[in-house]
Length: 106
Figure 1 (tube, rainbow, N blue to C red):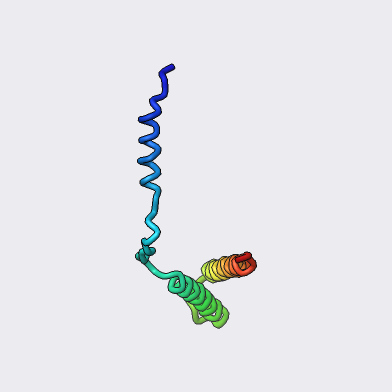
Figure 2 (figure 1 turned 120 degrees about the horizontal axis):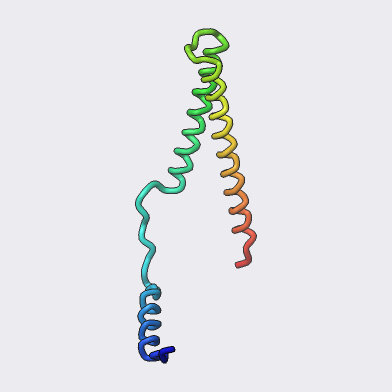
């Protein structure tokens, strides 16, 4: 077993520590991409469009004016239902996270 070179080990620790140090005066940089609010709005719009398309397919099938088969109508209905349920779960998680943050001691 080789002896540990303490000077070399200490220098490596100092170098890693210097890399991890973040200056206290640095300001957060804005991230590229959509903002959270925009992303949430786009998702809500997408869920709404899915539900509206499903409703139109159902109405067209019931009236006999649509060209969609029963299978296509049912698949569209299930997609709309699934997207709505997923959005509801996201909403519930957001509310829970907000409540946890508000209950944190300062």
